Image 1 (tube, rainbow, N blue to C red):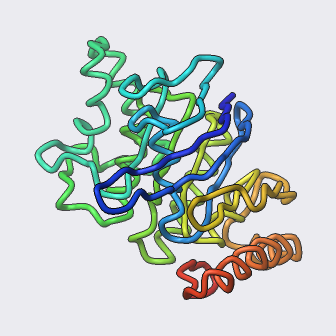
Image 2 (cartoon, rainbow, N blue to C red):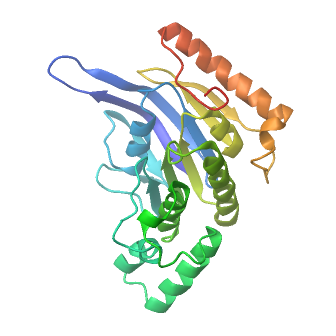
Image 3 (cartoon, rainbow, N blue to C red):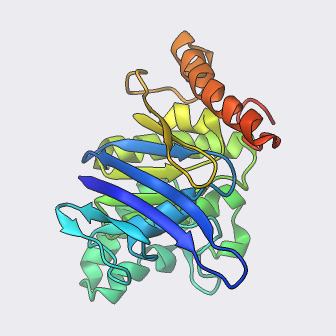
Length: 267
């Protein structure tokens, strides 16, 4: 369980303080898949950094599995996938995936078995000895995901991991992510600008306001699992969730008198 209690974040400067996160409190239950959406600059990634212990809130407290998260102390069993590619170019697919296990001094036989299982899970059999520059963008993102999964995180934080991919590749990775989540049942928090992506993948969608951000909507997604990522967008339930979220965000954009930058059915 993840508990956010009164989280605020203010960036101090000589000219003007920036109040990025206003006051956010919520609970994310174990095994949930939660997406966070909102206008650019509303603190979505900052909130993820605070949960991970990379950044310190100005006020409030985060608890993961009952333990308070302190800055610089990353919660155990946490995996984080960044916006930018973190696959190491000088290591093969096999060696990238096994990196965390090697740092843990895992026995060689156990590493080999684990990597083989992950390659199968990510549909990358036959690419074990391939280097990142020989892979497509989608395959590199799969390698990054498998690198993170190798150490079996119970909490997986995803910071717009698919934003740079084309629609077809992104949809294929959505399918694989749902399959992996249903098998491993991690708690997943996804930051995204793509409403289609959020509704397709999530159990819940948290909508943040413009800064100083607060929760405008905490929407349960009633579409049952397993979901077919190729056909779910055609369902009435998908359309209804999309409309509900976009209505809230659209009003937020109008109030701010700024253009909508959210994609997903709009790009």
